[in-house]
Amino acid sequence: MEEIPSSPAPSAPSYYAQPRFLARRALRDWWTVLHPPYTLLHLSLVTIGACLTGPVSAPRLVATLAAFFLAVGVGAHCLDELHGRPLHTELPTWQLVTAATLGLGGAIGLGVVGLFVVGGWFGVFIVVGVTVAIGYNLELFAGRLHTRAVVVLSWGGFPILTAYYAQHRSLSLAAVFAAGFGTLMTLAQQQLSTPARDLRRRTVSIEGVVHRLDGTSVALTKEMFLAPLESTLKTLCRAGPLLALAFVAVRFIHH
Image (cartoon, rainbow, N blue to C red; front, side, top):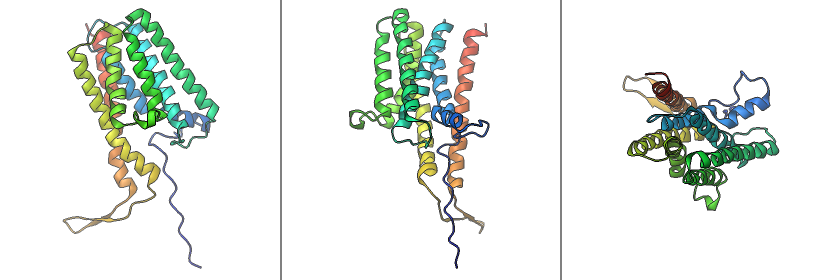
């Protein structure tokens, strides 16, 4: 009897998913849901916005970082996993709902404190941030907020503008240019992660052959297409924090 070849094992939903250094499945699931590389890149943009010009208040910077971590790193990511389980975690729904509620609630609480410290206009940033975090990930308003333009602006430009305003109670041309930088950084991340997700989550295999000019041939594989996308994503997610640390060094260490 002819043996039927087995189907390839499904890939992990992302290159950082289910890390082996965490023993328990629940811990690995939480690591996956929090998207550490992308969350760190996002918080790097917050830091860059806060430290774009001096003086910089360390307590305000820490509070702004905490708010964005709670709102995006925890709240938005948990809502995203609730909407269709794209990461295939085994986390109970009640845990995801609780984490999303606490994350967004904590971010709003820090924002309310910011209203008294920064001023009333800071409320605009709170409303926009909460609306996008919930509307994008749950695809509310008939999915009108679930677009690439919304995600690159809200994840890239918005944190820079918010962090700058939280420090200086105003915006500047420099902040706008920096927000453009953050938007393009996030756009680059999206342009890489979208096809990488498609390969990992929707593609079983790729068949074909590359015929080179020297007469050699190379078989096409899913891994061949995935490798350059994810290696560039890793580089991008390392470059952002390094730039953020440079800004922190300038504001708090270098004299």
